[in-house]
Image 1: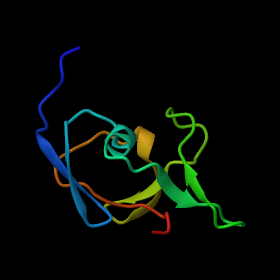
Image 2 (image 1 turned 90 degrees about the horizontal axis):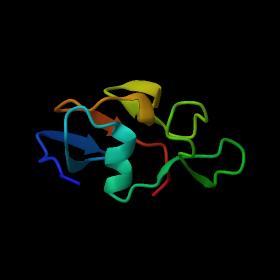
Image 3 (image 1 turned 45 degrees about the vertical axis):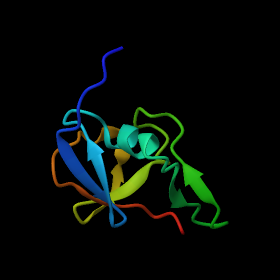
Length: 88
């Protein structure tokens, strides 16, 4: 399999990550080892995305100030600013 060269930069929770345009944000997060995207609204336990195709809502993040965006449905473009809801 041929690997693409990163041509974009995404900032996630203040951390700069290389990415490829056209890649999904969810893929970039997983590649960077960022598994926990939010916390459970009742228990506060960390949650990770499950389906990767937009049906489970477990990969919700804030993108460029817009809350509740599915990371798996966001196509990478240079300069995205992402904030996860996971506690650190």
